[in-house]
Image (cartoon, rainbow, N blue to C red; front, side):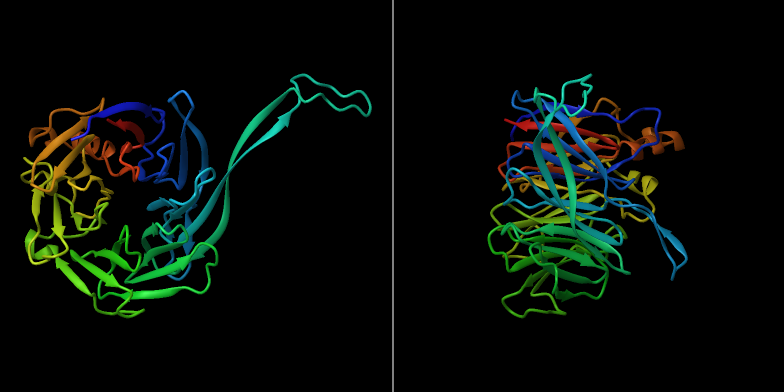
Length: 384
């Protein structure tokens, strides 16, 4: 297991309401990190030449809208983000809200700046004394729908991306948004989608009933039945089978499904039973039922390498689970306390645990840098 060395901590102001980070995306280089929030904002963090980190940019991706047909307000929260891996200097970011998907081109340029206190006398131009860096997020595409989006994922070919829209999986290209292709139609609402890391014609989806579907586009462009299917609900045997996340391993031979209080690691060659079934946290007992009533909380997880998965929990805790079933705590934040049933006995402690939920973890494809949320705070680590 690699050592996690903390390099940067971003804390929100204590006098403001908690604005939880819902999604984190680490660029392939590991030098740029984007984080989406409940308020619809996106943060951009960058690594400096000396190795330190800084929050470079904050912009509003989504705003609350009103659904006239249903006569209700739709939250502007960012539910998912991803960075196209082929982009180097100026990353191409895709973000998803409940009703909107946007593509962002993050430009990086230097411009000359006039010296401070310069006052022109007639037609007079200032001498160029310095150059200032400008980083901006430019919206280049917008996709809207009357249905709800659940997830978005950029393909490693650098151009294609897939997203879930209610019960459908849709594929588009960044260089021309139209036309689009519906590649899979499911019976229940889909929650997550992922591309195979080496075979881009294979997708993985999870739904709210606990099924994980393989979609092979080489068989048929549009499918209503999955090529292969793993049934997590049969293994879990409870009401918390909702698939909060699913993702292929870096070599594509395995995948995991993250549920409210469980994580399952599967081998593609045997979908009858998982390789590993681990409770999160190990001594959870009935704690999960006290914290959540429906088990549909966000827990964006990721692979550390081909042998272990990193995922979060309430109370500022994050765990590493190996394919052999070994679980270990990776870190405890500055706000974490000893967990247990007594910890969640009061409403105040229960709310504290929710406010410090590690709802998103992401690691750069090279496995050298990681980022994790703690409520509205962000922690960046070097993997040594």
